[in-house]
Length: 532
Ligand code: CMP
Image 1 (cartoon, protein in one colour):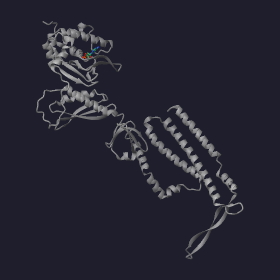
Image 2 (tube, protein in one colour; image 1 turned 60 degrees about the vertical axis):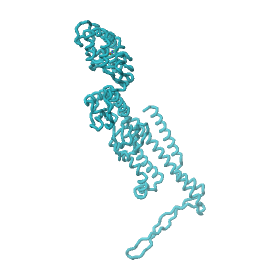
Image 3 (spheres, helix red, strand yellow; image 1 turned 180 degrees about the horizontal axis):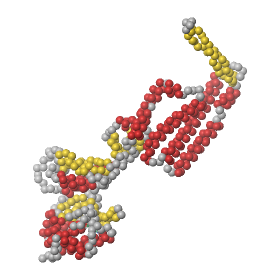
Image 4 (tube, helix red, strand yellow; image 1 turned 90 degrees about the vertical axis):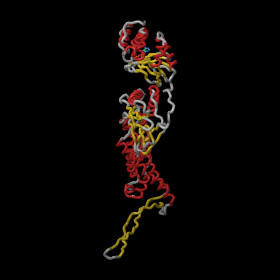
C-alpha cells in the first residue's frame, strides 16, 4: 500500500469528520428552534388534562361500567388563548423533523466515513496478503453492514427517543415478509458467498469450468458472485447462489493440471514406436511440464484405427488452448517424419497401392544432389553417393522443434535441405545460439563419427527439412574412403574448438587433430589404411 494513499485517506477522514462535527455543534437544539418558532408565530404550549374513557367489564354486577382515567394533553394555542392556525403548527412540526432527519443523515455520514477508513486500515494496511483479499472483501462488507445498522439504531433513537424501532423489526410480520422477499436473492447470494469463502473451492487466478458452459480465469470472488474472464476475454459474472447449485471443475493455479489430446493411427503402425515418438515430441513442447512425463496410451481400438490419447501436465494451465494446438501440430510433423498415418474412415477404400508419400518427399536424384553438394563428400563416387541417398531419409521438423539434443546419444548426421537450424548451448542456464546452418550445411557429425553424446542442441528455426544419414549406411563408405576421416576430423576439431572457446564443451577434447582422427578410426573399427 502506498504511503501517499494512506495519507490521502487519513486527511479525508479527519477533514470530513471535523466538518460534520462542527456542523452538528452549530445546529441549535430542537428546544431552541421550537422556542424561536413559537415566539415567531406568537404561540404557546398548553397542557390540559382531558378524561379518557375506557370500558372495563365488571364481573360482579354483570353490567358495563365506565371508568375514567386522566391523561395529559399537549395543545398549541396563540398567546391570546385562541386556537393556533393549522399552517403554523404544521410548519413547526416539519422544521423540527427536518432538523432531526438532517442530524441523522450527518451522523450516518460520519459513521460510513469512519467505517470505510477503519476498513481500509485493517484490510489494506494491516492485512495485505493477496490471498486474504477475497475473504477480506466479504468479511468487510458484512462487518460494515452490521456496524451501519447498529449505528443507525443508536442515532435514530437519540433523535426520536419515543419511537420504538425494535418492535418494528421484530413484531411486524408483514414487514418481515416484504423485506424477506425483497432481499431473497441478495441474502441467498450472501449466504452462498459465505459458504464459498468457508469452503474455498477456488481462488483468484484458478481456471474454472462451470457446468461445461463457461471456462475462464477467476478474477474476483465477492459477497454477490464470482467474476471470471473467459478465454475470449469476456467477463462472466455468476451469482453465488447459482454457483452453489452448479458443478464446477477447478484447475488450481499452483497445481500440476493435466490435459488430454486425442489422435489416431492406422492399425499398420507399431504402437510401441508411435507411443515413443509422440511422447518425445510432446515433451519438447513449450508449457508441457518437465516434472511429469507425458503419457501416450491407446484409448480404443476403433473401427477406423487405433485411438490414442496424450495426457500431459501444464506449467501454466491458462495457456491450455495454445499448448493443445502446439501438441497437435507436433503430432502432425512427427507423423510426417516417421511415416505414420492418421486413420481414415474404414469405408474409404484405398484401391490403388500408392508408394508411401509424404508432403515433403523428394526424388532420389535431388537427394543425391544434396549429398554431393557437401564438399566433404567430394571424394565419393556417384555409386557411393547413390547408396547413401537410398539409405537416408528426409525428415521435416516444426519451427522451434529440437532436431538433436545436447547430451543425447546420436548415431546419425543431418544435411539441411530446406530452412535453417541453429546450433545452441546453455550458458548460465540461458540458451546461447552459436551458429546458424542453412541449406547444404550439415550437423550431427560429431556424435556420428566419435560415438560421443551430442555436443550441442540443434533447433529448427522455421519448418525445416533435413536429410538424416545413419551410422550404418555411412560405415561401409568410410571404410572405402579413409580420407573422409581426415576431412571430417578437421571439421570436428574446428567445431570443438568453437565450443571450447565458450567453455561449454561436453565432448572430451583430446587436444589435437590426431586425437580426433584416432577417435574416429577407433569408433569405426578402422586401421591406418589408405584408399587403393
Ligand atoms: P553433434 O555433437 O553430433 O550434435 C550437435 C551438433 O552441433 C554437432 O554434432 C555439430 O554438428 C554442431 N556443432 C557443434 N559445435 C558447433 C560449432 N562450433 N559450429 C557449428 N556447428 C557446431
